[in-house]
Length: 166
Image (tube, rainbow, N blue to C red):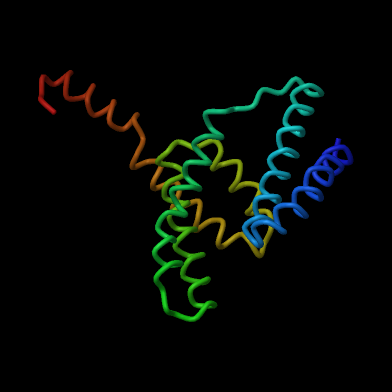
């Protein structure tokens, strides 16, 4: 499957890169890369569904894409209007993107408590990653708890039993 996906990538990338780069320069090359990667991804997804009878979780995938796209939004002014050196711009942009993404992912329900537990268990087995993994997991856990509907529902039920008002 990997060989076929790579061949599909090459078949779509080579002609489109030559043509689009000639017409649009760097933007054409980026378009060729994105188009070829999308083609390869779609093929790989179809092959996986067919071979393993897997069902893609489109709702979760959409939430992840939304988190990613929204996290890139605050970077636009930084890229367009910043006069700081490139390395500083890159560093600030990376930190801003990571913090925004880590915040939006649990808010948009792209990750849940079970996902977080699984990721934490996997990443904390690697000693160099353990401290940062624990820090990120703690942050994600706090956001998950803050935006948990169960907390709101329990409060609502508790108030109803006591005859109170929200």
